Amino acid sequence: MDILTVCAFSLVSLCVVVLVRQLRQELVPLTVAAIGILMLGYLLVSLSPVLAFITDTAKQSGLGGYFSVLVKALAIALACQVCAEICRDCGENSLASKVELAGKIGIIILSLPILQQLLLMAKEMLQ
Image 1 (cartoon, rainbow, N blue to C red):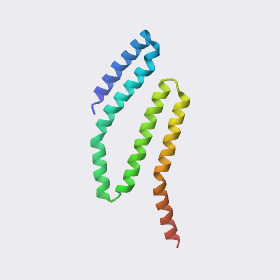
Image 2 (image 1 turned 90 degrees about the vertical axis):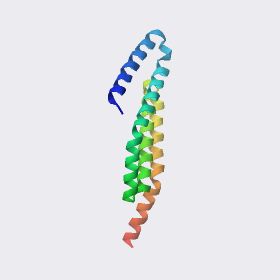
Image 3 (image 1 turned 180 degrees about the vertical axis):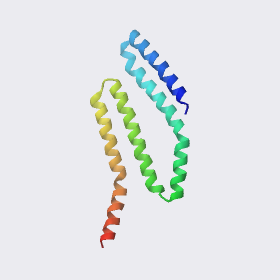
Image 4 (image 1 turned 90 degrees about the horizontal axis):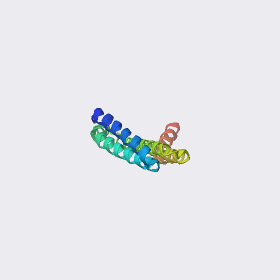
């Protein structure tokens, strides 16, 4: 990922949003959402080497199952955060809160099997 590319894209996007705001105010939320999605796509592509490295390291350590849950939880958190910020940019704070709540519930549901294993291990240790 080239941070200068991200900064340049952000500045050009800012100019576009300011221009759209002056010409057609009603298109600003759509413009901001589209720019956010484009930037997110670029950032996700840039993350693939990092995820590959972390996945290989997790496989070598023998913690692949736990690691996959961790990566999925991180993906849920990031996706919900980006979506909530786009909702806030469009003036929909209530919807943003619901997206964040859905993400938290999703992470809890995702982590239930690990919690179950942890409780079984604790039960075995106490016996």
